Image (cartoon, rainbow, N blue to C red):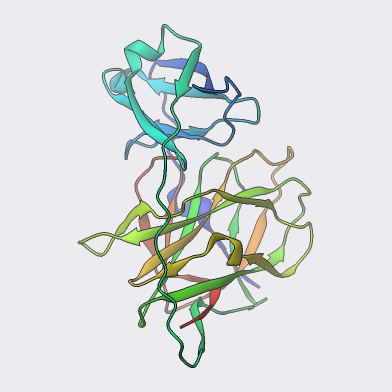
Length: 269
């Protein structure tokens, strides 16, 4: 079996300079409830994480980045940016909810056609592997949308091996920006779940999210909780002559890799 270690390709180098560790709990400004799985980090600087189920995040900041801003973002909440110097003095931070207008969908009578978008491979001989050592790492694949009002029905992911019982993920769907890169998250509500501890193709139902798209998008899987201890690996089906996009940490920069991953969407138009 040919195995590609994804983390090894883009692993964040160990920083030996002095660091400051920040700890803060994120809360809903209206309900005072803790906010889980919120993306926190310094954009494009290789520093990021995700809050846990109690809303707590821990972030180590190199002294060289001490004048930067932390970006905190989540679906359904107003994005907040705050200076690191300010964050050092507080232990709780409140996020305000943000109303989201759902996109109007015009239904026209026509013959429905089925299509498959993304990389449909279930290869067992070539795999893409991640150890899940960083919260907020994310793998994305491109979906070429050729028809307006394309309805995204089911996301499928081909897992070759998953030794964990607690591998929690989040699905993100991003627009394509004017440079052809990954842009803003277009989801109106979060999609989360746990990978089953087995191999095979898993299905994630998208119909309840009413996802109609007119233009190209990227669909991504993000790790939002730490795995059980040990250096076990989750492996996904892979293939050559294709492309995925990967970022090591929450709020990090995206990196293209010339490898396809078994992740595709069944759609209608």
